[in-house]
Length: 305
Image 1: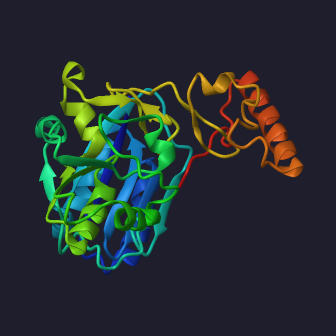
Image 2: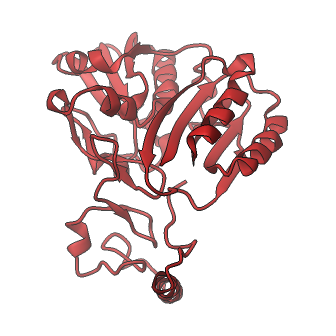
């Protein structure tokens, strides 16, 4: 059984460069794969490995007092959901380009999963999905607004153009694991919104703790690994990723005449260059040959960053 750990923590990590090599070497030794982002504002990532390996890595982080309160969400799968390890140094662990949105200084009110249904069922509460459009389209909470952003840096403009601090008195936000809401709530507090709430631990924690029969979640939840999506039981869902454009595709979308596995889908078929299409066709041929030899082709899947 492979343990998948999604984690993040905002803290003063001025020495993130020294952590870079330390974590890269440790993950390599422990055979951990996935992605870890390091920035002066903290750490963010999703990693996978054995129970012992994940516990060792988390223990190493928490030995530093700055990470002592680091929380993570776990799910499980039968096979490794990542092909490789990536440890990267970034300017932000979640890119918003709004220096005033500093979760270490100001943040909204955390709401436990058990209390989330009551909050978002209040008609006076604006329920806001802070994720991007391709994520929202495969699943979201009832009553949630979709900002229809392509990237998270567009979120501040959506708020400024569509929400009114004098009328939208209560705003409840959510995202996959909680990290985007940290930045989003800090931004909204800075903009003058007083009652700003966000789901503690994100959608993944909600799916883990709230029984399916009581759930207000609809659909599946997009994840940034080879599973593409997970269902309410946190097991791999029924979406796949288009290799060409990396959009998540439902079973119904894969019935489109424009969908060709490993080559294109209805989102990208009319924008692919002939060169790109030919390259995808050759790669897919190699994938099929590898499968016939009972091997895994390392380029079989790729995902949004």
